[in-house]
Image (cartoon, rainbow, N blue to C red; front, top):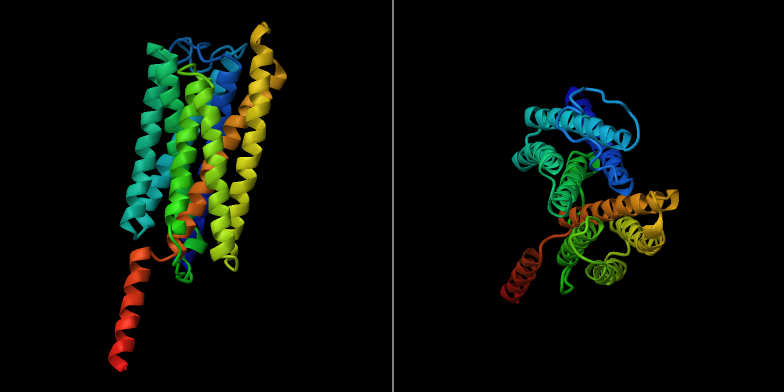
Length: 309
């Protein structure tokens, strides 16, 4: 009984860590949207103090740092908890990977403050944030009671398999977020990002259609497809609105409220889109047997039938 309570507590703590990471992503997006990235010139202190004067852009940058410290502490606790209580070695390794990522993210943030080069360091910082987020989200799924339960093993005789399609979709969404970060931080223009949005939409539709055709009776996969479609659709609408706000704010003296709200929402929904695709992919990998296993079983069944005949 105590082991079951410990597992449930670990799962809830992983969910809490992932939720705090969402707040951290929002805080980081607020820093960029409010042009507050250079508000604090030193690191790890702020103007040589633990708590600087909370005025202007310093408020956003300091809030981002506080939340980053909180997430780092939560991640360290999560990694240690997993290492002490989780029997599955890959999950233990993933816990330590999450801790390594959050440390690397802190060092990259320090490089952004101390060394500059925003087009490079800020883009890398944004990309690493997404990698860390889906790592923590994956840990929350792996430690969940659902993932630990005795789930049916499904066959997928279609080609390409849903396992592969979902993997491709997640990879495409991740590339799209890289393109978005590059555009947002001035590494390149809007065309690659806009093109990527069309590709993401195609793969999201392909994934959901495959689930409807092959696994209509599997609620976990159908629900995952719905979440993915809602996220992608919302993200495309927000992307168009955010770009319009960017164009309209070019002549503004300071970022407008509409610009800040739309660009921050676009960043957040982008992260949630990647997370929804990641969760759907992991669910497919958990529930659907690999194509090689399906082919092997079919071959064995055919050989057995010939032998009996």
